[in-house]
Amino acid sequence: MRVRDKVVVVTGGGSGIGRALVTALLERGARVAAVDLNQEALDETAALLGAGDRLSLHVANITDKATVDALPEAVIAHHGAVDALINNAGIIQPFVPFAELDDKAIERVLDVNLYGTIRMLRAFLPWLSARPEAHIVNVSSMGGFMPFPGQTMYGASKAAVKLLTEGLYAELADTSVSVSVVMPGAVDTHISENSGVTDMPGGDPENSSLKPLPAPEAARIILDGMERDRLHILVGKDALALFTLMRIAPQWSIRFIQRQMKKMLGS
Image 1 (cartoon, rainbow, N blue to C red):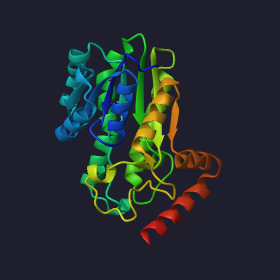
Image 2 (image 1 turned 45 degrees about the vertical axis):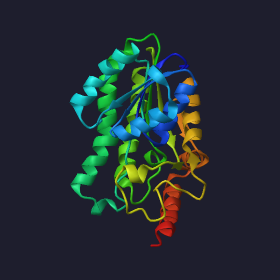
Image 3 (image 1 turned 90 degrees about the vertical axis):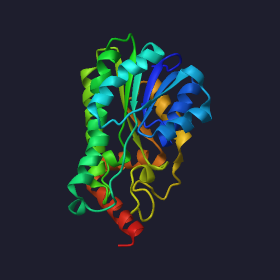
Image 4 (image 1 turned 180 degrees about the horizontal axis):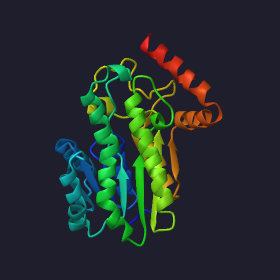
């Protein structure tokens, strides 16, 4: 789906990849509804872009069902329609093994990454299905197909998003709604800070020896894939390489990442 003159909802639109997506969408001629938990971050995005009424700001916690259920009508009240949804918002877990995670941390990761995505899909899918052409983009992760020690629950939540998206692709294949899943590698964002995670030796969990991809480049790759109706959108050379390795030699690939993470953590 070409995004020009379309109305696109972006969660996590106040920072990182989300802000880059909002920027790139506006540059491509779309109208954008930016959704974020942080009012200050949204205001900063709006101030940087100066997009006028082509950009609407929606402060919302995607873990709250009532708030999410009210979003479609708020977007349509401003823009007149909704043509696409990009579920980008997500958080990582504290950088500890699964056995050391408390219930609160596990529930928070699942509530934002998985159930937040599900809530947004259930709220917007009826409206998207009524459009002549529509698109759903769910952002998973390189960690959704390759396990990273210390981020097991994060990876599990993103793996669920990947399979959820593939299931939607199959269910909506003969409809007007296209579906894509994004699997970014290391991208230069503030995900650890925005997740409230400070115990990050060696940096974000998905960092590799490759320099993290700038967020604007990640946004370009995502939108190019969306406009070409790609099911899988791999972002970054690290994601592409590991996706290929995992299909060829899964056990070797998992042990390789495990060794690399031990070096990074110095343990």
